[in-house]
Length: 307
Image 1 (cartoon, helix red, strand yellow):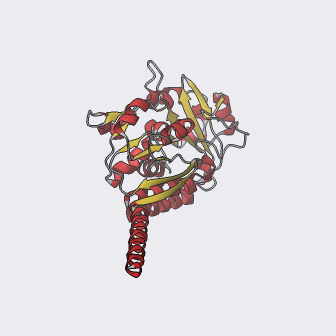
Image 2 (tube, rainbow, N blue to C red):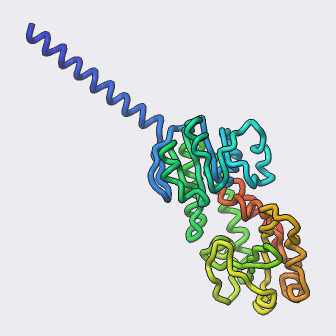
């Protein structure tokens, strides 16, 4: 009798152990551990209820055919205009999430960018939260890691790899044509222009695409260093890349970037005389960017305009 009881206990323990192993295995199969710049997050594979606070992440999911439940309906880029419909929840602003609504809908995943970095801890208490902003000091490296993380979460690794290979090829084509060319990046706002150097918000123009910066030291800032039009003439760039911030933010009564940039001084530059002032899509470059679609589109418009 005692022997039988011991056997039953042993069998019970074995069954429990087997169940635990199966449970652990199932967890391993159903979740993926994502390491990102703000921490490590366990995420369900193919989460169903997704909230996105970063438009680059949103255009990535859109390109990959992944649906979302909600987003901040503020300054939505025109190429993502369908997400303004009532089909998608408005989960707050780019800087102020609606915590009450998020707690109510209980997302399976929240994707955030740089504008939400300061509230990462609060969002992580509500749902698995992954940071997908690019690091301007390593634009391509951080971008690829973000895309590969998204690919792992949604089982889209092969599709992501294909897009990344296309981006690599486009970058190499531009680098072959940009070598030796001095580029000036100008963010236009309120009738004034600010510029950026390597390693900055728009440092990818130099660090990734291979253009040379103007020889002047540029102060690093989120909105760039304000400069005069004389500055542009003195450093006489081969290419001017202009981004209309006012157009992206919907500033009322603002002058278009073209009217601000193409004054008498700038018309004396090599860039103007050679037709190399490129007016970049402000929504891609200022509002979104860093997404699988947006980064590819950003590169494509420079490639198309470069002579």
